[in-house]
Length: 402
Image (cartoon, rainbow, N blue to C red; front, top):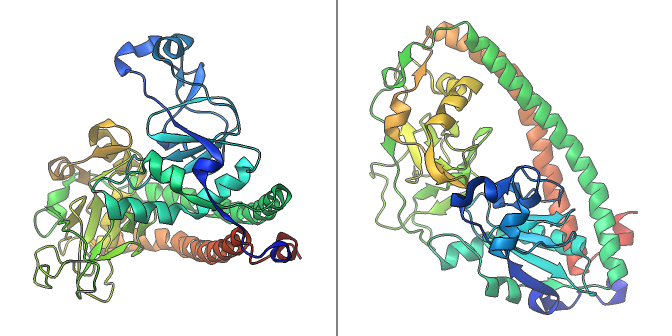
């Protein structure tokens, strides 16, 4: 690739694609519009970073006729414009014709651009979309003009296709590691459920805590370092706490602030998708004073209960079902759970030696899981570097396969 021109020319998407947006029919029409076997209707939650073949909801022909919803062709590339931090910037490529909702931008490529190459370029640029949305708007979103002006490097078509082939081969290895992680997570969940099954869930959650459940604080982020940091919602993951999204707090927030965290505090997300709301993690010191956002709750376990044990309880299948059932909201992209609802959860509270026994069984699987997660992180860093080199034209696809 480099022998054919070094860095490829940067072209705005508006000159390479037709860019449109979907629409959302009224829910009041009920079964006249929404079905499970009609024309696939894509929501931001359906976007899977790959080929999209089916959705869990469809539109009837009546809905298309009465609302004028457009059916986009296969190979159209989809980009989530809004829907919360978990969805914004997500992508897919249609494997079948489908309608899409209004939160999604649809890109139909012309003769200059392979849709699979465009999908790869958009996925590689997702952090850039997120930073742009965060820096310009209180509610994260991407506008149509943002998409039209977004630049993509455009090599010759045959080179685009070769790049896609290279990354597909690398992604196959990545999927193997992901499959191993998924199996270990299922195993850990099964072990957790089995260890907790023989214990009575008869203790109100507040009885296991040393004080009230507290919501966090979300001031405006500071550009400059102030000595105090803020957690982002992304620091709570299905695997627990991970300091992956830290921001600078403003100068007005000091180490004496009421939202400053202590090592061992238990955190729970207050708002997210219905699948992810109520994620739990044990906070570990990040090296500087740190506060948590208002979309999280803080719980401090009492001396009768360890934070890791309570985290295991609240991530068990039984507790997750309860948490999802208590979450409220009209949009599946953002539902909330209140501190009042969380206080109603009942948990097991055995003796500390029994808690340690339960955790030992869970930790035996967690150790294996952490090794695989670490390997995946290393692999993705290498892949990210390879994609960057290939998309810029600094490395030839033929060299990458050597």
